[in-house]
Image (spheres, rainbow over the protein chains, first blue to last red):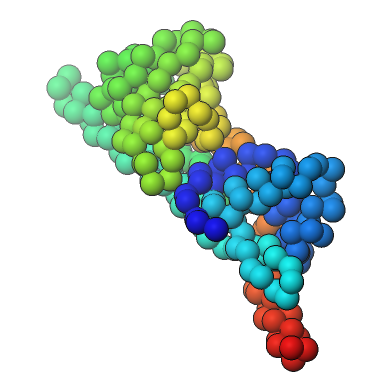
Length: 109
Length: 148
């Protein structure tokens, strides 16, 4: 499966996908046994798995005759990077505001 | 794991001045981003930022004013995505202004990243999962090797 990049926020915005990740955080599961936990068609399950895979939340490995979904750190790291990005974004913007306001005070003096 | 952003800043100016810089489009553009903001609840506006194509963000932030208390509080939704109106990032930005020490304490909160909060809390409570899962897999692979 080709790994394209999917926004991690998109991946976890869906409740079924969040539930899949929670199940997988307890143990790796074959696609079949994962699908048994959900009341949806197999193609629908496959679609969700594809999104989780492409956003780096899981990896897929063949073990014996079954395909296994395994939780992967990358998706979580990306999520964290996004939040850190915004933290830094606001920090630099507010610093700019601070300079702007200092300038304003000087001009008035 | 951090799931939201909270920053506190102090400025030696009264809240009225800070409020101007948060709500006047021309002033806002000088420190934040180009925008078509209007201080009206329900007003939809946009910020234009640098695109981050790699992670699916086209640089346009779609906002809607949620709450206004002049000189005290302002909040708006903050949504973005890879383009064509598709939204994947769904969050809320709020500003709280408090008069303090002859100036203003400005509290910025950027949170409510849809789906992230509950999920990260869950992961924090189950930390160590990564190691555990990997260990189990290795064991499983060993078993299969032996059986083969």
